[in-house]
Length: 210
Image (cartoon, rainbow, N blue to C red; front, side, top):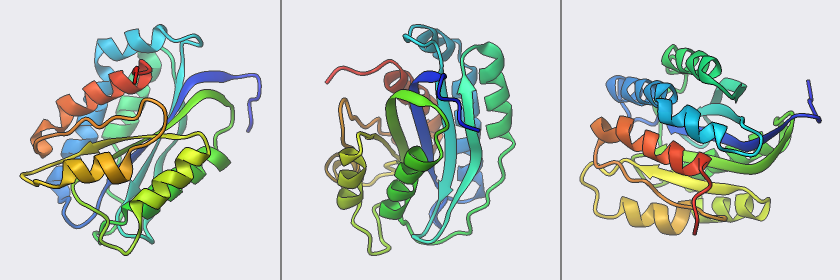
């Protein structure tokens, strides 16, 4: 149900890679890392510093260009209790996407549509948080999908999981991120995801300066 009288500082879509290169253990590390970040006391503090003292969060899992699943409907985060509730929900998420190619462009388009069509209240800012360990290999154009989202007033930030790749960080910089204050926060490997996602969420919520 729409709530036009409710405004959040940020509406954020977490778009998490579940393609073939992300195995079951890697997926669990991502979910546990997100849950730990939501429980970190610094996250509650930065949310409380916003004008409206609340943000909205949803999560989508993606793999190939045909496969995207919303696994966490929109939820308001405004205090320790709501953050703990979200952490429990994310920590319990099971992998729904079947392993497949890396449909990054389709994931960006889907996340933008979620912000455009399902957000039930007003948001001062709208952002997509894309995490993944590879370039689009499904025939999509991530840069074009990025440009479509930015034209709608959406910012895209990236968390590339490098795992030794010499090109993925540059790919995320040039083909994935865009919009006001857009940035990447690379993770050297999947084991670094927990610390990296916390830094990334703090930057996103705290309105980074270009």
